[in-house]
Amino acid sequence: MSDHHVQSPSVQGELQRPAQTEGVADPSPARVEAFSDGVFAFGVTLLILGISIPHPTDANAGAGLLTLLTQQWRSYLVYALSFMFVGNNWVNHRVMFSKFVRTDHALVWLNLVFLMVAGAFIPLPTAVLGEWLGSPGNEVVAAVFYGATATFGALLFNVLWWYGACAARLTSPEMSGRERHAHTMAWAPAPFVVAACTAVAFVNPSLAVAGFLAIVGIYLLPTPALMALLKRRLSQPSGRRG
Image (tube, rainbow, N blue to C red):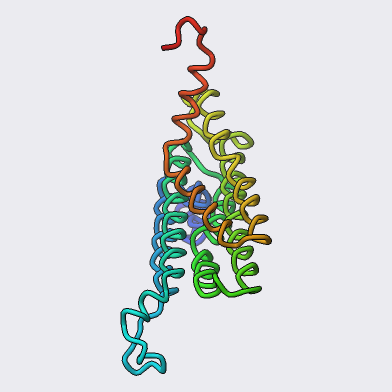
């Protein structure tokens, strides 16, 4: 019998396991983005549940279908606001992750917390605001609840970008400092502006909602590209501007 020692399959498996699991804990940016797309899609789908469907058997059905539908105009407004809010987060999130060439454990978990607030949780304050906007006394609480959620989501978005782009340097080496700065300057004001509108809600909730709509409209623009273009224009000598 040969004296050559043969390892058991279990020992071989233990020796090979580190090589097999290496890198599994840190998914690629594409996988993180795909999961995030699913959460955003889930969030916008749930938004419609904040609008009730009138039924002929309802106690107030005698008011007529048209009346029952038009009475929910606040819910329609807030639905559109939140749909664009989540859509804006999705668009900018895809822009952000297009700049990352790898991920790490901290980035993945920061992204999960961001998705929890800005994607999966947002249907709740949306439904609350749609039901209570216009109710004296209660509409302040509803608008502040909505604004606080949006503010926290915008803050988490910036923390996610700051960590990935500045702290951990997970962006592409080809990304210039000017481009990184342009994205930072475009996204950084969001939590402060949303927080300011939330503060307005203590005095005038309807005005605060109008402010939220304006913010969403502004951030639908290609803000980082516009910021980079403005910076280039300002850095040129006055004689070359035109």
